[in-house]
Length: 308
Ligand code: FEC
Image (cartoon, rainbow, N blue to C red; front, side, top):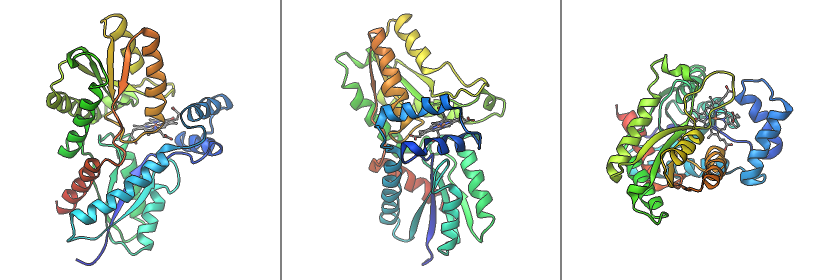
């Protein structure tokens, strides 16, 4: 058919400058401005990774441009146009939907740049997109997860194998930690698929890489006064080195697809500093960013969703 298919590519969003951090943080906190201390703490973290340059902005732009090209090259029988919809920054999810409608799009697919489904993460992106689409004549369906998509696994296995070469010891002596963003522990009562999907991705990579020595860890938990899934990766690192004698650690952040604060600060600065203090070597697998295999993973997940 001649009519264009809209693809709403949803991602977390990031401030574009240090003076936008307050508005961004306020949005994450559902309209409650952070205290001056909280704001300083977050601004300092951004400053530590980038000194005023926000890498997630560029990675999301590149991913969306590359995905649009991949979709049209791979499936020339259809014509796709990608729109960004960000969770906590402009263009917001609602802006992406409005733009599609303004461009005359009537059929669309939404996908989130995060492979694992949780009601609190991907589910909340989808909810907002659905609510906005209902205001227009727009038929939109969604990819909910793609955590075992073959191209995704191949790309991650390659990254684990490459990173293992940074160690001077055999891979049986490297402890691999697959990690993802923690969420409030109440998701367990909601029977949320998030923990199990993360375990499935970890198991699949470990099996294909022939890893015997690995575990899953939670990272980047918020300070919100409720319990979050744990233990935290920093506690895991401390226990592994101090009590289990591990000297070589590799983190593979399977829950994230781009270089951004939670990778560049929480892993590359915080985890590395702790490992160094404990006298262990810690490395991280490279992020997917615009890896052609990741683009293909997204393109195939979108096409499968459309074809039913
Ligand atoms: O580089 C950047 O500018 C953005 C990095 C970034 C990514 C990201 C991904 C996820 N988050 C998830 C859940 C939560 C929950 C809360 C929460 C809070 C923050 C704060 C910052 C932040 N997150 Fe985030 N997240 C990123 C950044 N996140 C900054 C606020 C300060 C802090 O707590 O550190 C708690 C909200 C609340 O107050 O109630 C929950 C999940 C993901 C992975 C899936 C996805 O990408 O959507 C889940 C990237």
